[in-house]
Length: 191
Ligand code: AP5
Ligand code: MG
Image (cartoon, rainbow, N blue to C red; front, side):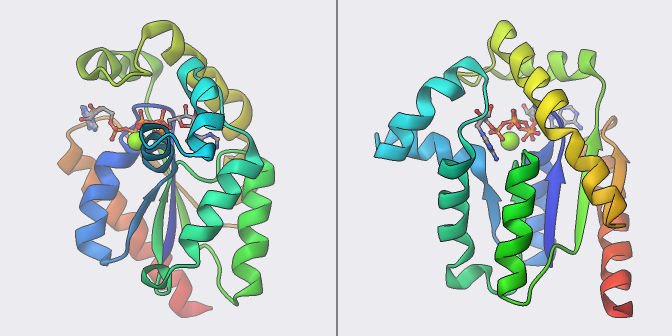
């Protein structure tokens, strides 16, 4: 299965993907993790992405699309993957659709993790990644609201969206996520 997780910073995308990897036996593709690895390794892509990431802005579409395309073409993604943090803009979503369509593949479902801002801030203060500074975090939330939230309508129109309440324990949320995955699996069998 090919599942996308969408949610604001701190919504629990990475946390739920860690659990889903066990359940679905498909790789977890986190563009944030891929970018942080590129920054650490000081690759040309990492150097190009670093400033935007440090400031809480999205990195340019062409950079991220190049990275994800290479990853999606690798063997372990043949039977599916979990996309965490990608796509994040409409052009990224359209590029992903084209890319999959050319390979006779498609996105099976999109999970939105909905979490109110005050809880996101509580989680961010309890963590402390380099981009978890309050001012940067607030810009990351704005980037989500302005550039990523429109994707919810895009996938909603395609009938692929499941909106999940992201408040509760990680285990409680995982039960909701699994129920959504079962609905996606049924829809896939019906196609
Ligand atoms: P990315 O790494 O994707 O960060 P993000 O979207 O800001 O999200 P986070 O990783 O902070 O949160 P999460 O939803 O994964 O939650 P988590 O499980 O960690 O992106 C970083 C940057 O890279 C972007 O700002 C951008 O610059 C760039 N980038 C990445 N992808 C891009 C793209 N496609 N296009 C352009 N730019 C891109 O949980 C958060 C915390 O809460 C953890 O401490 C966790 O333990 C805790 N937690 C989780 N669940 C719960 C729960 N139920 N209750 C309490 N605490 C919980
Ligand atoms: Mg994450």
